[in-house]
Image (cartoon, rainbow, N blue to C red; front, side, top):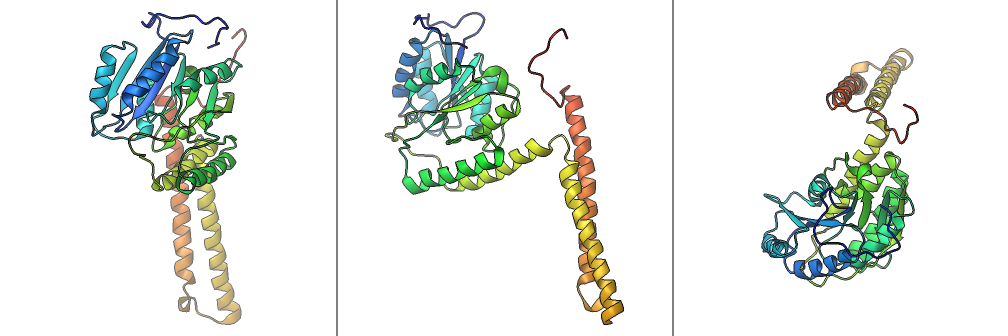
Length: 331
C-alpha cells in the first residue's frame, strides 16, 4: 500500500471492502497500559490516509486486560478483541491476529508502550518504496544491559548468520508486512520473530529501519533468559525447514549412511585386530559399537523415508505446491 502525499482524514468506519491497514497487538497482563496505548495509537492512525482496524489479542491475561479492552472497544468500532481461554504465548497471539486481520498491510505492535505508535507511519513510508517487510530496529534499546540487550545482540547475530537474513533486531515486535506475503505462514513455538525469514523464503523484499524504544513504566516484563534456549531450538527448526523441508531424506539418510559407514569401519577394525593382533572380538566393545551404529543408521534411513511420505501427503492433501510464483505472462 503506497502512502499518498496528501494527508486525507478518513472516517472512523472501516470500508465495506475491508481496511487498508490492520494493527495487531498481542498482550498479556497489560491492563494498566491499555488506556494510554489506545489513545496514542488511535491518534496516530486517525492521521493516516488509510482505513484501519486494530486487533488486540488477550493472551489469557489474569488481570483486568480483557475488561479494559471491552471498555475501549465500546467507543472505538475499529477495535476488535480476541480473548484466549488460557495463555498460549506471543507466537499464538500473533498467529490469531494474522488469521483474523483483513488489511492489505499488517503492523504488529507491543502493548507495553516500549514500541512507539508514532513510528507506524515511518514503517508505512518505507514500505511505499517497494518493500514487503519493514522491521523495526531498537537501536537505542531501553532494557537491562546484560540480561536483555547483550544477550539479544548475540542471538540476533547468530540468527542472521544461520538464516542468511541480516537484521539487527529480530525481537522487535514493531514490524509491517504485506498481507499476501505472510497470509499462509503458520507459526509455532517462539517463531513470531522469524517471520522476516519466512517472508524472505517467499521472495519478499525485507528491510530494517531504526525505531524508538521507551523504558517500561507500567507492568512487568514477561521475558526471561529461558527464552534464549527456546529461540535457539526454534532456529534449528527454521533452518531445517529452509534446507530440507521438501527433501528430509537428505538429513535422515545422510545421518543414517554416515552411521552405517562408521559401523563398517568398526567391523573392519575388529577383523584387523583379530587377524594381525590376535585380539578376540569379544574382549573389546567393538562388536556392540558396530551393531549400535548399524542399527542407528538403518533407523535413520527408515525415518527419512517416512518423512518423505509425510511431506508428500502434506502437499497433496493441502493442494499446495513445492514452489511459489511471483509473476506470469500469457499463462
